[in-house]
Length: 147
Ligand code: CU
Image (tube, rainbow, N blue to C red):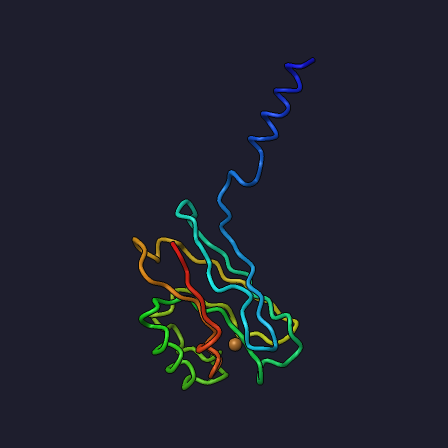
């Protein structure tokens, strides 16, 4: 009887979700021009990583649109500045910008979008950031991606 209990406990411990890497994250954005995260850590055992972006506010995309863009921190400002010029029809990103590693669509209140990318695109590591490319947002809507 005791042996069976021990075995059951061992099996439960082995099946605990904490033992596996989580290769996805949900990021919330709101009407106050904020992301709910300042830092995202990507586990090195992940082949691919998925970001689910939610806009939990009510404002429309034209006035309070948000996206989630991943780039080298050194490229952030230039990608955002060039993206602003690319305009709303392009989701405020230069189409196929090689400096952009991954990005979601630009979304408005109540909407959501996801993006999955190959982790190998981050190479051996380095200094990466995520941000929103809506004009004027990247100054505060940004965070660090740790790898
Ligand atoms: Cu934004």
